[in-house]
Amino acid sequence: MWRGADACAGIIVARDGRWTLRAAAGAPPCEGPPPPCEGCVLAVEDTRGETALWSIDRGGVEASGPVAVFLGLCVDGALGWIDAWAGAPPVAGERDEGPAFSLVPASCDGRPGLALAPRFDLPPDAAASAHQRIFEGPVHIEDGRLIPSADGASCRPLVGAPP
Image 1 (spheres, helix red, strand yellow):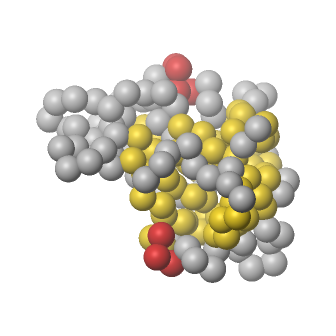
Image 2 (tube, one colour; image 1 turned 180 degrees about the vertical axis):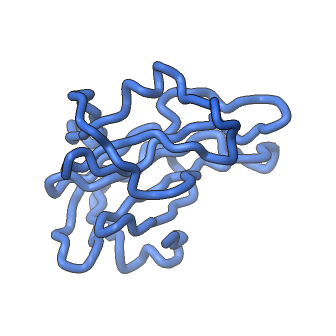
C-alpha cells in the first residue's frame, strides 16, 4: 500500500539531520539520514512486514516523468538509501520516464535485499543491463547507504511495479 508524504507524519520523525522510521507494527524503529534528494516527493510502501521509502525527484515542471528515484530500507535498525535506478540514466524518446527496470525491496534467502523489477509493461525478452544486475542481492548499510553484496542468494521481490 502506497502512502504519500502527508501520511508519513506518524511514521517518520526528523530530528537533528537524522530520520527515525517507525515502521510496521511490532518492528523496532530504525534511524538514518534523510534521502539524498532535497525537495523530492516521499512515498511509503508496506512490503509484507517491511517498510520501503521511495524518494522521487520529479525534475520540475519541464519533466514528463521522474528524473531520479531513491529507495530507503531498514536493515538491522539502520536506515539506508540507494539509487533505485542503479545508475541507469533516464531514457529519452517516446518514453521519457526513466529506465525500464528499478531496484525494489526483496527477500534474499530470508535476508533483506534488492531485486530488479520492470517499471512498466515490457516485451517478454526485455532484460535489465548487466550493470544494473550487480546491485541485486542481500544488503547491509554503511554510512547511510544500502550496499548490495552479490553472494548468489536467491532474491524474491516484495513489491510489484516500482516508481
